[in-house]
Image 1 (cartoon, rainbow, N blue to C red):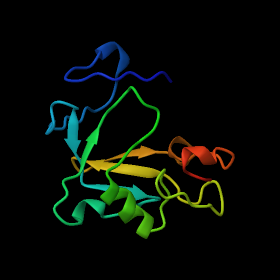
Image 2 (tube, helix red, strand yellow):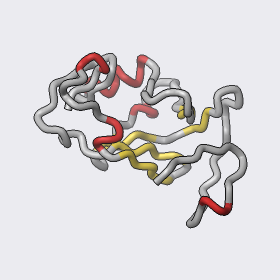
Image 3 (cartoon, rainbow, N blue to C red):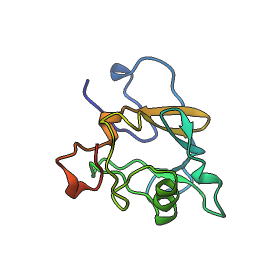
Length: 127
């Protein structure tokens, strides 16, 4: 399936199903608030730490995800790898799917959409 990223509208010829609209809190970078990140269905609760507001920015210009230092540090405490905290995995599917909870709805990335193969150590994540 081919992807298409649009903001503020959608092409009815390329879409079927329910639409879920979310507010843009940071208009410069299309930042949308989110409530949590789930790993294999388990909540990370990084958005509940301190006074940090969790925003996700939809960026079609990069193939990698980035997070603020507080978020990668918090995930590292829970044993979740990131570019800043490389970790050798026991298996390629150890962490399962990752879901962003936005507006109460889960948007899921499969394990192979967010993890890099073991040979790609320079990218920061091992599977």
